[in-house]
Image 1 (spheres, rainbow, N blue to C red):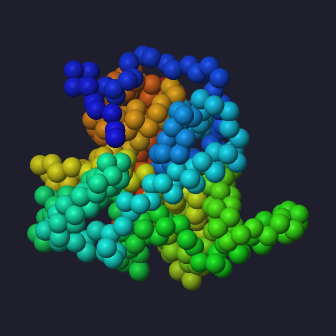
Image 2: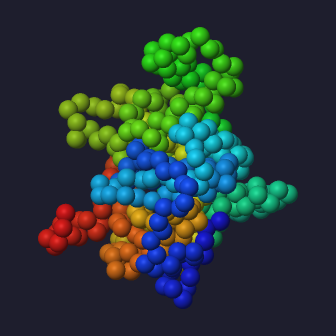
Image 3: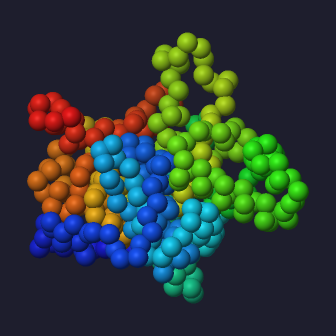
Length: 380
């Protein structure tokens, strides 16, 4: 659950005081998250998913994240020693624990529900006896839509989270892909292909054939390691296992910008990053507002939507980051530096949500403060 905002403090995240720089905690372990670029929405959501998964599996690690730079790099801080392989294993375990609420009774898209059907679905989903499962389901459903908000042009059609970039166009279905990533069972051919690559890299691996369940767990831990700790190499074929949620700017392959038609070419992605990012959806709730459904972190002006997220220097938990994402200054036109810097924010990134033909995608984010400084001649 996200930390409440302090009204008296002008939107101050609970537990984070202005001008308070969190130094290194005694005895912590730090790892650079080299795979998570600051200007890629998929990478930022994967960062939130990582924290959510680690808190679910190893809360005693007290995971925190900070950004160092420029150039900006994310660093993961843990209260106990842990190697990268241990972090990947704990992350996989946490993702498995958080998968239970991700089920939509066969609906492939949010708009497959009418407002009345979505309301009834929420009532039934929130009847779980397990309080933790109930909390997780409530967070997920609140991040998808509200039965109180419908499309301005179609009163019987739900308005959806602005994170949703798949409505069935080109057989891309948002809820179906969330379920697929939560279930985390790619076709056998996808796992075998990854296993063959590992054998080429380490012939000794062929001498230890793992059981089926162990092989799949190891395959996922390898994908998580690649997504978190190495620059992305885009080795996963999304055509073999369609799970892309269209949050990666690399998926915007416009014909006009290329020598040849890119449509026959398979989209290559990072399965580990996609799974982590899907886990982050509950961190960004929606809420009815005067102008319609609002999504956490999104600024909408004249029909154009953009997602904003902060980079911060203190070591922050997911609770504090969630509060920062809800800060009203973050989604203002200028994201005033003098106010947000008081809470440890060192940069604000903003990525436009654009439509190209029938497809929706997110562009690479721009650094608002760095751009303002460059335009004014005050810095780079």
